[in-house]
Image (tube, rainbow, N blue to C red; front, side):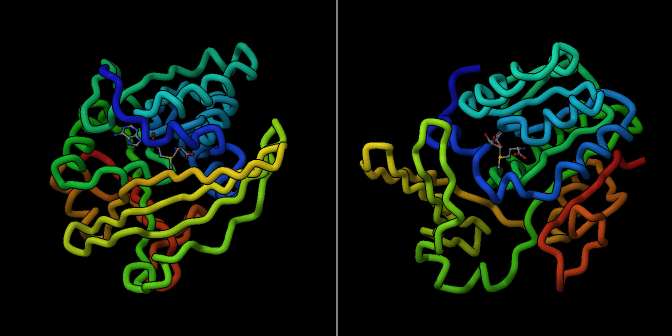
Length: 264
Ligand SMILES: C[S@@+](CC[C@H](N)C(=O)[O-])C[C@H]1O[C@@H](n2cnc3c(N)ncnc32)[C@H](O)[C@@H]1O
């Protein structure tokens, strides 16, 4: 493929060090589903392998696809530190979830930690879902997760100010990094927020640096996703509001986790 713009290039090196990512409670959920699939798994938007590598360690054959060359390079480096057996279970490929052909059918296709929210338009979302349909074995499942938008997040002006920093972390070369978050625009018609993740870096010699990872993020409501899935030939088998598999309930659920199958 021609080289796409790599939104993650400037900050991919930090991904595996970020506390809120390291502490996410989704890995066991995805590993268990992958083991239950009893066949090859495709992880779309696999990033640096946060979920992919534990899945391969658990004995599952898994293909990881990501648009970002930089995220994939960190995934490859991480994989290179695994045993030959674990490495042999993994295929990594650069690809775009809106248009891919892997010439293989999978028992499970996942998009852990919201890659689907990078798809801003219905045309892109359907293109991705149709690609997944073609790559899914007849009895296979797809798991799509997105965040459940809390109303204050959609309307409160405070989110335009930089948040308090997340806990500081230290890179292997000694740089200290603090990250903050802010919105720079809201579009309620397109359901898109422009987001900035802002990294404040202190180098060993005291020099300060500010790096910004800016991107647009689509938000979805529950029934909208159900309708999209139906248009692409899927039916919802389960809808969870969290990775402990509690059922979706709009009061307490931070996540919308759809487990879907091909419609009959
Ligand atoms: C928040 S990260 C999640 C990474 C990983 N799944 C995890 O759980 O840590 C989102 C990933 O989606 C990837 N992504 C964004 N748009 C994509 C596209 N059109 N096709 C494939 N991957 C894409 C990004 O490069 C990034 O690695």
